[in-house]
Length: 185
Ligand code: HEM
Image (cartoon, rainbow, N blue to C red; front, top):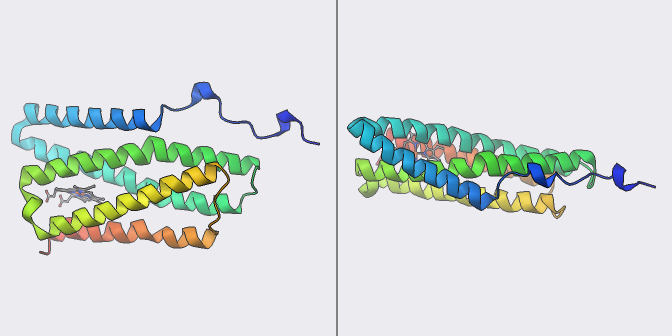
C-alpha cells in the first residue's frame, strides 16, 4: 500500500518559476527597453545588433520547439503517475516557460522592428515570412496546450503523433530561413 511519502510530490511552491504572464511581460519590457537603448546609443549600427539578438532568440525558440515534442514522445511512454512522468512534467513546463515563451516574444518584437526599420513591410518575401512565423506561433500554441494536457495526465495522442508533429517546426524553419536570406520575391 503506497504511503503519501511514496507518491510523487508536487513541485515546491517556493521554487516555482514566476507566472507565464509575468515572464512574458518581463521579456517584452526588457526587449523594448534594450532596442530603444540600442537605437539611442548606436544609431544606424543598432540594426545589426538588433538582428544579432533576433537570431539568438530564434535559435533559442527553435531549440525548444524541436526538443519539446521529443519530450512528449518519451512522456507518452512513461507510466501515468510514475516518477519519470512527473519529471517530464517539470521539464516540459520549465522549457516552455523559461526558454520558449520569452524567446518567441523577443523574436517577434525585434523581427517586427527590423522589418519596420528596413522598410520590408511592402515586400512579398516578408509577407510570406510573416505567414510562416504565424504558423510557427500556432504550433507553439498547440505545444503549450499539450504541456497543460500532459501536466493534467490528459494526453490521448500516441508517440507516433508527436513524431510527426516534431517535423512541422523544422519544415517551417527551412522555409523562413530561405525566405529571409534569399528574398526570392
Ligand atoms: C516572429 C516573426 C519574425 C519576424 C517579424 C522576422 C523579421 C525579420 C527581419 C525583418 C529580419 C532582417 C532581414 C534583413 O535584414 O535582411 C530578420 C532576420 C532574420 N530572421 Fe527573422 N523574423 C521572424 C521570425 C524568424 C524565424 C522564426 C526565423 C527562423 C526560424 C528567423 C530567422 C531569421 C534569420 C536567420 C535572419 C538573418 C537574415 C540575414 O541577415 O540575412 N526569423 N527577421
